[in-house]
Amino acid sequence: MITLTEEQVRMLAESAESPPRVVDPQTQHIYYLVSGEVFARAQAMLEEEQDVLGMHPLVAELDPEGWQDKVAP
Image (cartoon, rainbow, N blue to C red):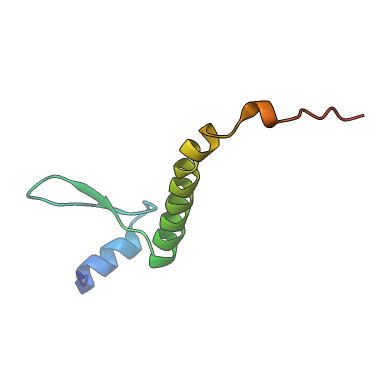
């Protein structure tokens, strides 16, 4: 884990960007800082999406001839 310096905390508090971006000066990679709560929610959503996508092969194996379309009255 990286601990921010007091100057970095001050600069983040003054930043108008949401979420704030930081740049690695050696690689020029850009990183976005999000709270732990936001990260956990995003991670849960991505995992849920992967679960749904993982069901695709199972859905493809279903026998469509066994389905019955029901028409609402």
